[in-house]
Length: 337
Image 1 (cartoon, one colour):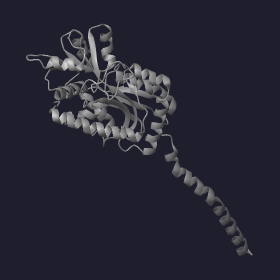
Image 2: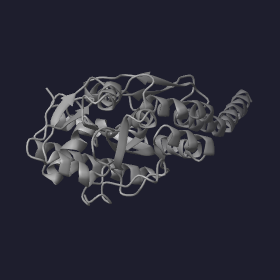
Image 3: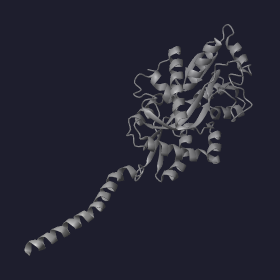
């Protein structure tokens, strides 16, 4: 009798254990899945690193998208300015950051150029990053002092080619994009001008407007105040087509230099190793922000042409730009110590 009672009790205990197994298995399943389902931005913030000074056009572009992205992601999105060393400081910082989506780079043309100018850059423009979304393209514009007797690129080149000509050009530094654009022009036109590097774009443009320097490649927004003041004249833009920013100004191609099509870019990148699902989510949010008319309008005001392309297209652009500038810099023997 006693053994029968024990047997019944054992069967009841076994039944209770078996009844709990599905619940335990389900709990274990959800426990294992929880980390993957967690919001990667939960409780933190996202930082957009800009390799430029506060108040620069690139800084303004980053801040323009930071606020709406913050609302999309539900976390603060802040801008961190890390200027210096031809953009290396900011790019290298992001390249070495954890690949968790919390640190982004506003990558622009200088970030691609820098490793070909500086051996100590510490990152590879392609291998060290995952492109998320392109924000804009950025043409440069050839500006000359209004006192020069030239109104077209052909006239400017002819004037520079005269025997004994001592024309000069400014830039925000050795190896900068404006410097390299002028190198391309001199190579294609067969002219030589004196390079006068400055520590930033504003003084480089200011001295052209003042007549101390002959010419400069700069952004439209940098040149416009001096054009309006009558001290500077824009001859051409560097894109493959006229810019909607100022469609009355011809391109370098239209001006007789068919191989001169140099367009800068700006976009958001994250460290290599960031999960593809996360970068896709981030890209979708950026596309939503770029679709807003007020964002596109403000980018144009800053001198940028909005671009809404796929991740794959942006990655291809980075690879193309990397190869293009590597050749330009190598052919021109330009180095920054």
